[in-house]
Length: 393
Image (tube, rainbow, N blue to C red):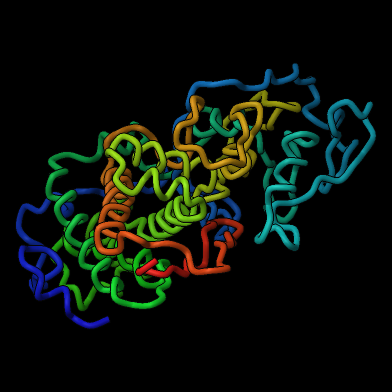
């Protein structure tokens, strides 16, 4: 990309200062490393992304656990299997979220796990697996589980002070409009490559005074974390969340029309609904500090536990028509971010809001290209790889 945005008026993207401005609130955001290190090396580290607090709603009642745990006496079921509820102890093998084909369509695997294997040990993940909303939401807030970095949770919220929300709003709006205008005259564009890939990085770059030409080093590198703490550095997660949001909105012409000039409140509901239906982080790992009763049995103490956030968001015991994208649903809830004050949560919401406003302002007839439908891919993180659109309709 060229340095065209440097000609935009105002501070931020067009600012060539290499130094972080004195007193900038981003420089005071500490790193939020997990209080308890995860075991099992890099695999768990990849799964340690932060998620959120549970929303109220319908949940299953967990069956009373046995003293011997979910699979009967120790050794009665090998680590590759579990006992499905209602099978009278018949051994069956649970599917894995890492099975071949799961990247393209994990939902069938998630459904089987929720219905038949609410608690099972997965040797590929080297962790016990929870897939139901009630259990995942509990594990994200219960003190018997270690808590990794989760933007918006209370410990995270208490770490952030003196953050200028209006300044974040200003740089987010300016960055979104610059990027939207750059692609408005193209006959076809890929919103993932040309917009979603740049907006989260550009917003952080503008917020901390990094020149626009240096922005790419923030996209995949560690510079954003060094400049803004772990919360502000969650650029890749926000990129995927934004791509999923735009994919959900543009996939349905009625939703596109409804959100074209929507008030902030409706855009916010659509954003939360996209996080529920298609969370950017599908699996996170926690570790138990004590035995924990869950659906299907008891998670032993000192165990790694994989939380299937993507499965929880589509649990029909919690959400009606869970596969449908419905910003007006009366049973909302998402497990990606907590509700507390946090720059990452604020930025993500602002990026969603101004992405829609900027794109529809610059391209009032924006729509998906003929014959194109977004395809979500990924195991640990998940989003559309591309969003091919016709800016002129």
